[in-house]
Image 1 (spheres, rainbow, N blue to C red):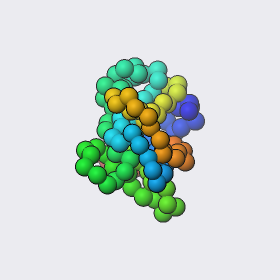
Image 2: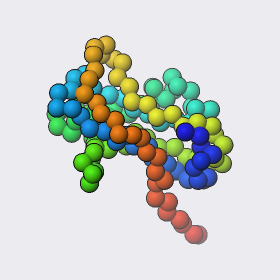
Image 3: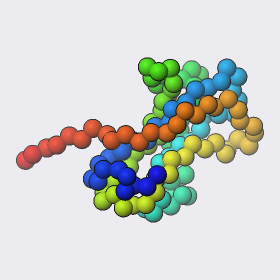
Image 4: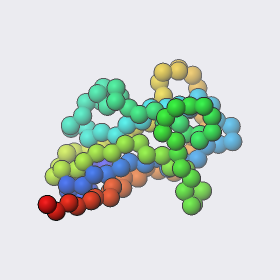
Length: 123
């Protein structure tokens, strides 16, 4: 998605909306990140990726999903600040490449970018 479509001088959070099939394999835990393509190198973003656990049950360490009212799960992937709206593309990634085995059972509804609440301070 291009940042010119977003409000300027605003912080955005990125979310993955998903469900897990009854039988899933190889997806937990995973790494996730959001980056402005022109401003953050892909290797740097991968190095700073957060750990996410797509199933809220289990003994994994990392960010956990929350259930939405519509039955889908959502998990925050990261955030970025859109300065002037001309930073190019936003890339949102969910990756698991440490354990090289099959993965199955992830049902993706979509990704969302939402403005984070801004608090104004007048001095």
